[in-house]
Length: 416
Image 1 (cartoon, rainbow, N blue to C red):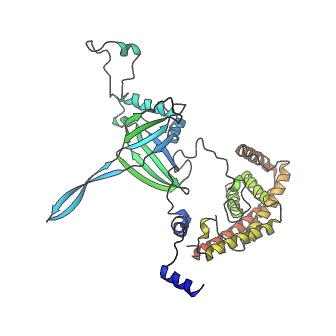
Image 2 (image 1 turned 60 degrees about the vertical axis):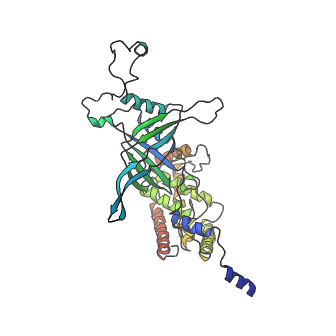
Image 3 (image 1 turned 120 degrees about the horizontal axis):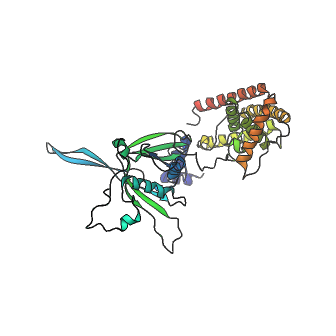
């Protein structure tokens, strides 16, 4: 750099880096401060069991899945202006909850429409009668039917609690395998609009619902289908393992998602839970990724390349943990390779004793069913198989050694 260039940079200052600030703010810390995305959400309805909702349990879950758009709760707080010794003071007096609008897809099975009719016919008696009653004169005649308008059905002996049709509506914002929950307590429908037909329209039709509610409760945590996020991942979801995960085939990587260490974790977890067939499939697919070369040498070479990338990231001031599944020590390739190789020997022996079963499941369209069938067949045949548990134990020790190396790196503060 010439003296002129140096003086120019000294007087003009440093250039603004185009991505450094956003990366430091949104990517570091495992995307801790990254903005949530509008399309990543889930909605669940909690109905009052005393009402006798006519939707089946499946349809109740489908109702939340048919939500096309939902507004998160909003608040307005009243504040009164007081004169305190000629100094203005503002005092909060009341909180108001804004209405929430929910837009549903107008589904062909009429799940949403049937939900609305169930709510409508529960509170109002206007739909209870046959056509002759509606057609008969009533202006100057004795009242034939006395129940019209707002008269909740079957309230005797149940108590006022039955009047609450929906106990809660839960809205989940999800990101990075975590959820933020907004629970609207005791919601009441104040408006329901069906869609509109137009001869020139081609977009899907919708239903629109407006609700009021008593209060909002908050919760957060990790997404666990069937446990923490009600109804999520239980119905109509594609549960075929991703090709980037060990169960979906994995990748010929050590540190990345679906790599050797990720596979090691998955296999050890399956073995500890007694899922021998699943462990066999996962480990066999990992071996398939490295079948073209020496497994120890191949993994070690990949480890060297990936660790080299980590070093470059560190030297350039970037956080390598943001794009890697697990950072590891320089001996990780050899450690995990030994573990997978030992389990591989046990698997080869087990396959021979099973007799003709093939772990190669390559059909993309039938991946889940084919894998499940293979696991079922393997489990059924393993009763007569002498699985080499010492090799599995050694493999577990190798993975523990790798994990300890990872923790040492994390605790050193290198990636903070």
